[in-house]
Image (cartoon, rainbow, N blue to C red; front, side, top):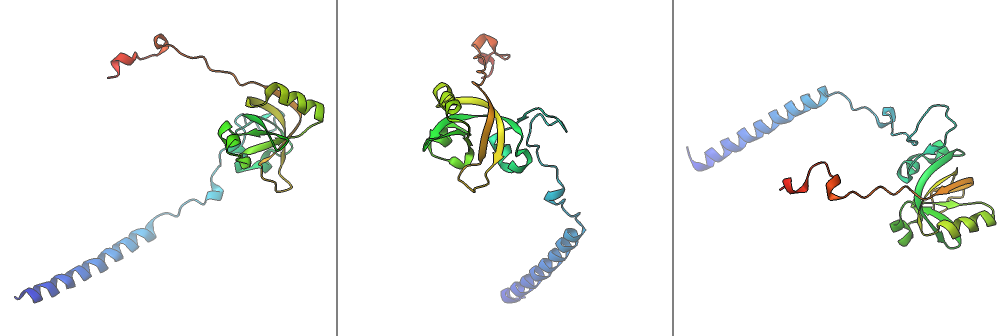
Length: 176
């Protein structure tokens, strides 16, 4: 048998193999169960302390709030962020990095009467705070996520205790 004949036979066998492989894959594909649609899956709750019918404030994060702001519109929320001024408007940013890079889509505008806002800015501006206020959706399609309105409670976040070498569970010298 010549080299050309062997090559034709090999190509013919490869063609048959590909057809059989496609047929097997098509059969397997059609027998696979359908994927569950995303609408049927239970998304992460917006509030960390989710209690049905609770009048407690919704403890949330900027990430969770951005997924479905309508779920907490008009409710009291507790959220941690970086409080700073942006063009004369007090804003609560998701992080100091967002403030420094003017990423307003990850921020909440703080609304209220002038004396209360002035005191808030004097006491807590340009630092991380925990804010408790009423969340309002962004109806005017502005650059930020939404608004926080009174009544407010503002505090500094709890600073975790710094651990010393003696406080660790596994001594570092054994981790070589």
